[in-house]
Length: 316
Image (cartoon, rainbow, N blue to C red; front, side):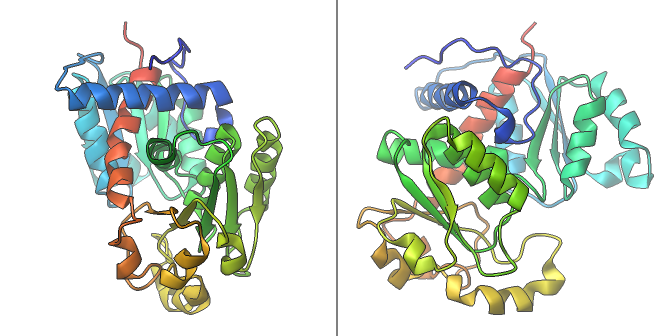
């Protein structure tokens, strides 16, 4: 397996909707190649002498470790930057921070609450900007999910993934990756928790090119019938903690449990981007059961992150 030559040098990674079908396929193939190299103990210092600036407004386990380790494995260096480490935390305009950081580092990775922040960074930065999570999208996670499904099921085209729960940034990016790979994606959320209508419309439009069916179905049991993958996320995203009790009440019928898994295909995978709240959005029996691939997803964050970094950062 060899990734076809596609040049992504300097390209921002803000949402998968901005990437072509071929570019997504390239990144997934590249991630698999880099994973195989790692498993064989081969050293690939493609990014020797390169630096990644990592801006975190939120706490992180998988994102921080995978990007930092990924950059190290590729021979580069990563800097962890929280708002209290930067003048941006004291009101420096994003324009100034983006321009200055672009003169120090070879790429900027941002995990922030507002998608507008990462878009503004991308407007002013002269190096690639990578969205490591915003309120609107989580592209790196969706790529790792697609990689995991491909490993477990083979070709993504024609498979059906059902996401159950809050129509959040993860749901948006799963629709995007489905549209790009030909994987059908159904989002099942209660009233008031639906996916963004504009993101849904964009994903549906782009899915025409691959034949993927992107749809919503309010009843989780109808949505899950015969599904190849059942996916969920926490009921309360970061920044909405004050609404936790309301979310728990509203989303209770959307718990992924043994009954819901039973209506999916008998070989269905269970997926969760983590961190998980056991016996809230998913029962312990499901997440810790034989159908769960949550740790494989988490591991593949590393390999996908490396593929993105290796592709968007200039090697010169």
